[in-house]
Image (tube, rainbow, N blue to C red; front, top):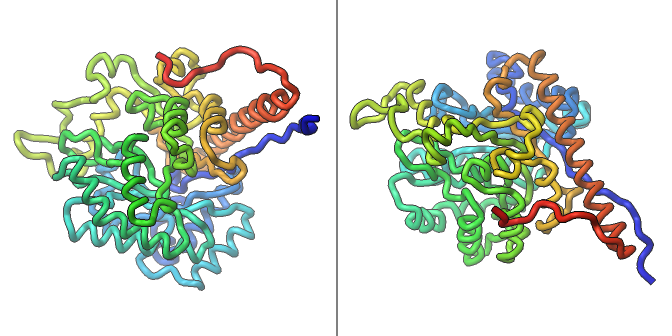
Amino acid sequence: MSAEPSFRPRHMKLGILTAALQELTPRAVRDADPDRAIEDWLAFAAGIGAPYIQLSAALHPEHSDVPTEAMLDPVANTLDLRRPFDSARAARVLAATRTSGAGICDLGYFDNMLIADAGLRRRKHEFMRRVFDAAVLLGVDAVCGFVGRNALLSMDANLVMFEDVFVPLLAAAKERGLVYRVEPCPMPGWTANDLWHNNIAYAPGPWIALHRICERHGVADQFRIHYDPSHAILIGQDSRSVFRYLRDMGYPFLIGGFHVKGQVIDARGISAWGYGGQTMLRGDWEGAQPLAAPSARANAWKKQTVFCEHELPGTARHDPLAYLQNRSVDWLDHQLAAREYLTLDPAQTFLVVEHEYPPARVQDRTRLAPILAGSLAFVKAIDEAAAAMHALQHDVLAVQGIAVQGHGREAFRS
């Protein structure tokens, strides 16, 4: 006798990255009282329907090596670590989580951990360790960030560098009981040179290669991916095939969380430049030298922005043809495929909305609040629909021997 079929959809946990509104708390206030920024963000998150925040940390603007004007997707130092984050600061933040009803899913520090300049790299690694310590005090189990790339070295040489300088960071995470979830953007505009891949952890092939290095050093459980489908669209992939490939290769466990951000491909831009993006006449070079002005350095992102634009989930039109061509994210299929191919527990997995859609990236809380509330509501509804479909088809119909109708989207199909 088969088990009694039951319908029990399992929903993922919804959150938002605090870089969506960088100066929610005025700089003059937060510089004098750093943890006020976190308190304000927790209250703001609860008001727009986000049960969790991904708490963004970054070098203070006074100490960053990348000027704000040169960033396509500006980071936020909502978690200000100019002075140590101690137990008293943690108690204040945790009290704010109880008061607001919003929690912290993990901490994010997005910087180049393999940067060529040894002094800058040391400063970034020291800061990352402070982020690790803050994560422990706040009771979260993961930190999200980049691997990065040494732009002076080949990709294979970067694998050697990863083993030499990044594995010790993972060992530090292991000592603290943390997981490091890698953001997989290739970061084509991070520098003014013509490299497309400025973050070596950009696709399943590299993820597996890096994980195998981690296996040799006993830190494999610390290396996971914070998957973002916008990056897959950027390099011509679709999530279903990515997830299926990981399963087929024996690595369905690698993805441990999600950034919910889309990408919309511009067919005219592809016609002009192809997926390699704008390779010349960008405005970031003069003769043989890159321009020093920060505003000029931002033009390096034309490698990417000439043919695509980030999507805040729910803001792009429903476009079945774009989904089939991998020119926009089919969010429903994304959530279905994650449940079908990855070995994750949906009820313990975070969906973190990352707002980088330029026209809607207004930094006025009154205007931005309904935009974010609408996107969060969309993501919640899509995940609930996927959870319902998966539970109905796999837990109810399958138990009763009832066939599921149709064929659905297939991995690796072109």
